[in-house]
Length: 346
Image (cartoon, rainbow, N blue to C red; front, top):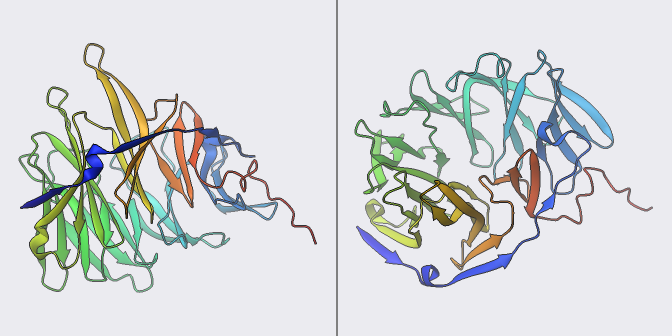
């Protein structure tokens, strides 16, 4: 196994970031998706609706009972939005319970129910979706037009809270992560034509977890220890093509702390929550949002005073939820004005 350590580890940039609190017409905890210009917003209501707001009008897209909880997912293609509906979120909180899953073109008033399960990701220009069937311990990669499926049985029997990451590099080749019976984490590829599983990355860290994303022909893997007594976090870039048996792995980041992680990829950068310091006596972390440029491999830590624990991306907006608020870390803040559309002068 070949590892190449980038000079990135030696050169880290720090920048004082001004995180702007996001303000919308709807209550911020009801917001589910917003475009960078604020012209399209999806939100849930206490009455149980999932609604679209655009062109100064609101359109209920899905109706359900009171306090129904919705979640959304989008992809780098930014064409469709994946919607999950949990009508028993506040009365029957089962982590592995199946949800109703819907799909819609972003900005469209039409939605279509496509499955039941736990939605994972959209793939291949938003023509495919991956769904976790937790009760069957399977991942289904489903083509939206034909409903053709690739079904993969997972090995995980260790963690009931495990959620696989997924990617598709072609219609017949997929990537996912799994945990074996010993609790060892791995990122794997599966060829539907050959019916063959190939290991991409196996963690050598005991009691570790892996997350990954796929962008620009790179498999980006975040490996971290879950043990507070032996802390480490690594990020690797692995080329998905012209890389026999995935032997070449570029280590582009390493830390002696257990980062929170929460790896998110855009077309240009990857984002994650980095641990800056750790107080073992009170088990307390100081954290910051960090990003690595995919081309240059340069690392920048966006310093703030909110101690972030999560990062999400909506359209071109990089958002940090914290204590019931959502902060804009990066994005076109000048275009987004209180979720309202500025009228264009004739």
